[in-house]
Length: 145
Image 1 (cartoon, rainbow, N blue to C red):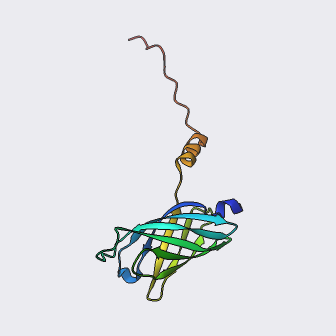
Image 2: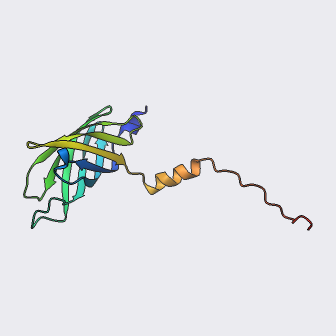
């Protein structure tokens, strides 16, 4: 496996789940920069907690590391009344397209899963590199009646 494929730089879409479903399954988008295993970035997610006066979307910063396929980072919410830091520990899939693991803070823990977002350029490149079927020959003359 190429080390480049394990580099986490880019956009990721994911969800995190609370233990025993005590909270909503929450979708999020993460943007990572991976420089030789030192990861940083940010997330944005809907505010599913229903706390009055808080914004509809929550933003957080990310900082941590990746060693091979092992991933460990901390999420810190920005401008939010609750100052919990959430620790994420996970594993990159062999193809570098998925990260699964657990999150935890002082009060609880749960699971998360993230998938690498494919950009338009990458999708177009994949489509044009796939072998396309050859269309069947179309007769230019109609057979006699």
